Image 1 (cartoon, one colour):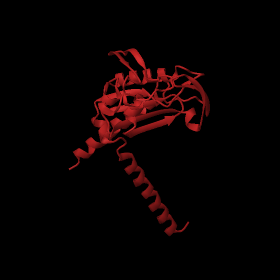
Image 2 (cartoon, helix red, strand yellow):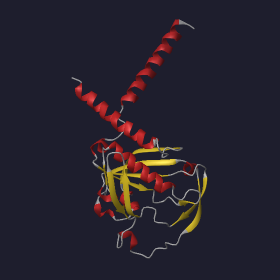
Image 3 (tube, helix red, strand yellow):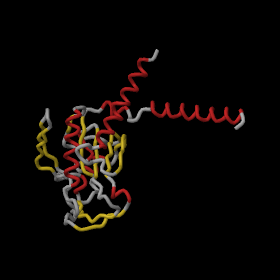
Length: 223
């Protein structure tokens, strides 16, 4: 290898090192997530109830809420329209084809009692409230079997929605209408990221938030 080629190789390696260093210092979550105080966790309104694991989404929702309680950064609320952030979760089927039941009220929660080592929470939530804008016409709510196909169906998903146009209590009462106009501030998709007790989705989100805050603090200290 000639001297010129060696110098060129060193320049390329140095450039890659600088690029990686800059990428690591880049903020990982938007500022509105850092400023958020309240959060609501809902099941993806488009998710059907899996025939092979009918309680999968409900269990994942409960485990995510408990992890957030343990983190103790955000206050959990029941209504998406009253939350600074809305976390939408969906449990994957583990395979790209899944038989599900549609038209079931996935986000109806008449009563919720959750307890961690240092906190207890009691609440309730309904996916659609009577008289909401999305109920002006009669709806067919009869359960029906359906087949969902796609790579994403096999994977767990965890999306954090922030504020957006129309975000607020007047957006409508269904979870779908509450998140339709919001911005996505963080997303994670992968196999078993909603599996307890580790819950990688929440752990990665927490690391991203804390790392972003750390980077901002370091920048503020610079002269």
